[in-house]
Amino acid sequence: MNRKWVFGGALLALVLAFVAAMQFVSQRQVAETQQRVAASRSSLERAHAPRVGPAAAPVVIVEFLDPACGTCAAFYPMVKSLMARYPGQVQLVLRYAPFHPGSDSVVAMLEAARRQDRLWPALEALLATQDIWTRNHQALPSEALPLIEQVGVDINRLSFDMTDAALRSAIEQDIADARTLGVTQTPEFFVNGEPLPSFGFEQLEALVAAAVARSR
Image (cartoon, rainbow, N blue to C red; front, side):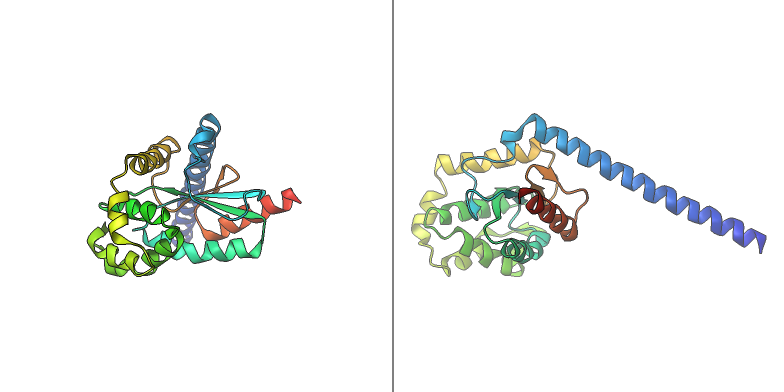
């Protein structure tokens, strides 16, 4: 019996030590991200970035997103619901981090659709149909194209705009900013410049709620 108690106590101590170590690593990562944001605030928001929500909103969520990311697709409706909870209080700024192979071409499609005022319908259509145009963690732009066309995008014009140097430059800037800020996975959220203390929707909710409360 004593051996069992000793073994159990040792196991519990090991688990607690592991949890403490993970919390320390998480806190250190958050602190490092805060330092990166403070050192390069312009990397967080750019004039070219798509936005939804009031320009004067006191709370700004910056989301680095990969359209081929399954977690991004799962979070998108929850983020919309969160914004609806605080009407007029929250703005979403979209930045691209196309980590999946082939996703950079899909991002170019979205930005070209934006020139036809169809960015958000195109994004929602793609996030809802990832099983059609992604395979083995890889984006298939040729499969995504018909889905974008279904939301009223002129494909000929889209194909032309996708080659535009300014469009490509904006995407490259997003990728460079993600690297500067230490973004290594998507979705990555910042609320008024603050990174999440740890990843999860509850953490995003809490950070937004606190920012809204401070603005009142």
